[in-house]
Length: 588
Image (cartoon, rainbow, N blue to C red):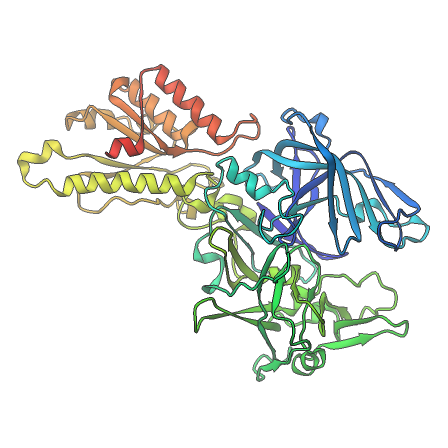
């Protein structure tokens, strides 16, 4: 899923979701590791504000203009009434969200290089009440949250809301689209323009390759509160800083303002880092300032324009590892804190850059959205693990699944829903075939050896992720060199046999009459090559497609999940005489 961190307003980590079929307008959705539920505003929604009192309606009612118009979608489920209604609260009950229904539909993205999520459940909210003053009701409805996607673990922490969904991640797993409770998120290298949007990626059910972070990925100490909680908590790190304008200066350790604080919440849905470190120590060590305006505004700031902040200037946080002697330091660029949060305040001069970080916090510690722009974070709920590494070093977010890693399209990092299981199955099948061949020696046993054919698609379109030389063109499984039992075949259309006119005759010349197929994608290369084999003279009854060893993606346009597509293709092939067999039964 593409995620972003934009300059201006109260910036947080967001995902711009398009609901329905045909995809509707993008809705900015807070990508929130600090909450569980998933909701979006639907038709006839109202946002109320104008009173600073919690639980009290204000005088301002704003009609929501950009919402999920579910009746206009061709793929929505029937809305399901929720007994007692739905309700969410945020910011110490300063924001209350309510509605009456759950509904399922397709989620897609403006960047179509990311696959759609089919049949995802969400709460339909129709009323938001925000405790804030609003002079003359002038704040536009577009400034308020229209959707929040909670990512915190479902059913964990003992809170009364721990089991209140819908949970997006739980839904993915319940549907079989992810097999693991893990998810990871990271941002690419930032632009040289401090006001440009940070772009990143969230990956569900897996962790990408090492190109998305630098240094070691370290499991850190978890330290949740003793009382009920929601979200991900780690032990309080140490902090250090050096002079921003002098990268070679000595780093100084920052003192702790409240030594009773032992843990920090990792909350991508919060706009500020709020930290229990001594502010005056930070200012002395880094050169940052505590700017106080004549009107009384007090903020952490850079004494200069945001563009003048050196790209090399960082605030550094060192987290203890869960393994003795291990630790990881996350260097957050000071530029990541320059989110434009204070640009609209008339008492902050343009020659001062307000920063989205607060020090001298008492009673709590929160690492918010600015921190997430600089960290690679991987979470595994089943194992109760959080691993961190230095982020903000990669590229590829704009390329979607093609930019996710170097292991190719069958890797779990590229969005095939059951990738880990598929990879394990194919690996087991290849290893068994190799073991069989390796036990046969001498010419008299040649006829008993198995031919292992690795098919590599080489697309003619330079923009295609499977174009020659691109990271996703690389094979996950490679033929062993120097063996006539293993061969590489290239193709540039779906059907391997059409792309290689002499292949069928060559196989028959070797006495090969039976074919077994595994791989990607079910509805393209796999189906195309099986039908091509039949057209080339192989008997359909002599062809086996191994179930749970082939896969594909959801088809948002057709409104079909990958499970349904696989079932449709298997039925089509079975109808023409192809045999189906579970891969585990086959290897037995």
